[in-house]
Length: 338
Image (cartoon, rainbow, N blue to C red):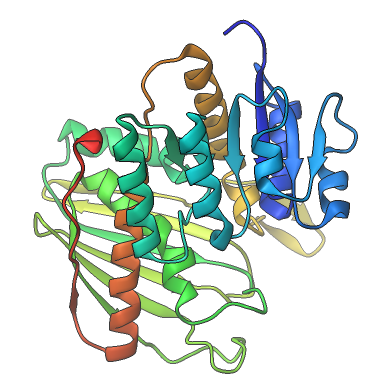
């Protein structure tokens, strides 16, 4: 493809607007052909100044807009399934932010629909696979230099949670990234999940169970633990340590700016995921654009990976409610995801 890839961006909120900026200013070989958001003011703020970009309040109108070659979905989760099905029906390549759907049943429907088309069209936005530190850890584990992995210790902290955040969303919205990262790093499936409830922080809104401690068991016997704490009050931190037979490796040590002032010296901690993973998002979208323009097979996190993350997260939510270990049960994997 010689011309720039025309991308329709669905959703012009915090994430969608950032992707519009990225496609316009950071990623070469692409242009924003359309922006859709139910709020016309948000659509206008995100894409109104871009040449040749049409604005819409309906996702389907943007998907069918002139000059659209591919679609990036960053709308709320409940809108993803219909948009993905529309893309599949039209043979349009798509990059969809997680989750694929509000529940695992919807994610499975999407996997089955894509499989019925006979080819992969979608990539799911698990951006940690494109982070340099995560890629270095993956290469280290795959190379076997430290021997077999035994445990994976993960930390996921946010400054504060949105007003609508629920205890279940700590797992479904936040820990879903650790779920995918663990499967990808280890090359193993997750067989069971147990969620423990520490004392809740006084900074959490009433009724929110925060923090939570998630323990996942893999098919190969590795234990993966995740501290999820979304009202830490001090910064956005994502860390991961792999403990292996011959040593350990840790990433996410806040290698950021060191500030010196009259108050002393210290490191600046990222305030949100768009800051901490800015480079990973750039790499993810650039890689997607280049792959679509090249016309080769779709690589990267698949719709099946999105489905598995949803199933594991739902097992975690069930454990959160019951306090018990909950097995993970997956549907048969379609051949297109082999």
